[in-house]
Amino acid sequence: MRIITWNINSVRLRLPLLQRLITQTSPDIICLQETKTPDEHFPADSLKESGYEYQHFHGMKGYNGVAVISRIPFEAGKVHNRVGKEDCRHISVKFPKFELHNLYIPAGGDEPDITINEKFRHKLDFIDEMAEWFADHYTSDQPMITVGDLNTAPLEHDVWSHKQLLNVISHTPIEVEKHTRMQNSLDWVDASRHFVPHDQKCYTWWSYRNRDWKKSNRGRRLDHIWVTPPLKPYLSGHDILSHVRDWEKPSDHVPLLVDLDL
DNA sequence: ATGGTAGCGTGGCTA
Image (cartoon, chains in turn orange, blue):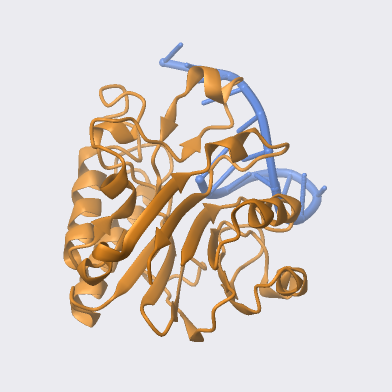
């Protein structure tokens, strides 16, 4: 079983790129973030024609938005409102062999100070709520998968410069602490780091604000696939599809792929 | 220290 997660940064604008990704990798399940469209404009029919008959999406005008599209049937999905907002950042669906959560955690703005930056407060509260909610509703012996743009790069080699990013939102100690606490809530296994050694640089996002993303290579690992311990033995493959960052009109995030022998 | 680019949807927010 092949699962892809991708912050697509507008599913309508990049539908042709999504189709190309499907042709090249043939995933069973695709999870998208930042679809940036209300549900009535989600390209549901087009993706059904591509083979993804089972769909669950939740979007809004202009911002955020998450979607799960699948060739494999799943039970009716859920929408989860987080920290009192209806801003389309968390959906889940139930497959026969596991439950899947698709997350778009708030980016958090620019200033890493909760007293002056409401967006950073929102991000930290969101992560806290997720950690509690996972622990309250599940146990780590249940087969679960969480994917998405978690907007935190927790490890030293998840960013191009650990020292220079210590005070930059996505890699500050307070976020890393909360992110790690969320990860520990159900003993989530970080699938990318299961395959990529911790001392090796590993990125899924490169800013638009660099003239040449590949040359400067100032990336961060913001996108993640986590599995609970029962699924760990079935992890069989992993790929970060960096070449997609070079397609015309790319997203600033690249797709992350995991294979499970299920 | 600053500014750099992109999407949505047409002015300014968010990333």
